[in-house]
Image (cartoon, rainbow, N blue to C red; front, side, top):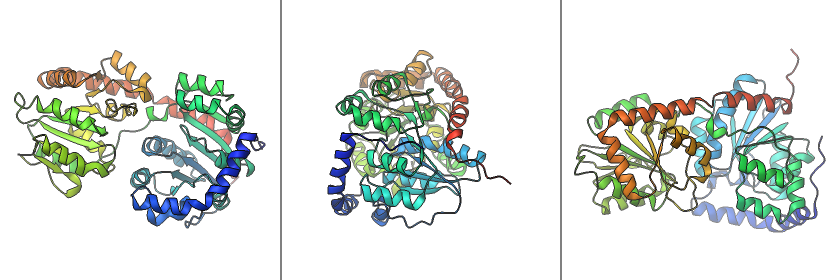
Length: 431
């Protein structure tokens, strides 16, 4: 059993959070009024779970937001298959992630909101669920949560770890705290060379590299709905802008609008990263001259529809399959860093994106080199690339095939991760 992490910085942090924790209920209620928290489940955020803990051993998986939570799915599914004797608890921090996990977690997996990092909330969460092991994804270094878990004998892993230079610089201001927290993990698997270097620089003992976003099955879809949409859009070229952010919709819409004279049946579908922006995106497209329909309003892409806003959760697999070309969002929005291209690649999609993709730079660079994706650094280039691919479907098809081949090479990574996690899991009970 590891000793709890100790440093003056961690002690000061714990005292500060203890003093601030009485404000947490009011802050959470205010966030709930703005739609940022689930008003019916605020107790979970305060470490007061209502769900019953099943008997037996519990293994806890945590990813804060949508991307991290989705990356946990193949790991959860594999653990359910290999260790059906365990109960899996998955926590997340955002409403959007919780809604998506409710649709896609395997049957029998329990979802809860993660507690805020106050001492009482953390203690309530851990004392209720009593996990034997915890697997944290990407950059979840919450000092009170980690300290309290170690005090209770929880074996911890940080997998698919990601740390930006900005975060590393911040932790470097408290080197003792960073070193103590990283020493709490029995296993650290960084997702790229830059993170590996930064974690080692802060005192972390890293293992083999693993990027969970590079593994997993193709996104699911409703087969009947796919047939219906293909019937509705038959004979029309379809461009999907997936996981877009403010500002990107305008650039992509202008690029598509410039092609409409040459491609009169062209249909633009925009799936904003945050579906609650659907109304704003629809208004923007209407003002730009598109005849717009919204999926969340029950509308369909009819013959006169030129832009369709797919503002629903959990349906990207449907639209990746429907589209002829996919423009991945996040590459044009400052500071976002792009989104995972392997989700459309697993479905053989023809992929384009913008220049700012630092969150998946190694993956994108490899795909660019293999012509499994294209970078369009600005709107004019995006228009040119889209037009060229629409005019040359054979080239677009070859790009999609290259993307699928690239995605399939990562299959062994999950098996390696499970092998490294196995010593942290509770032993199987003897028959």
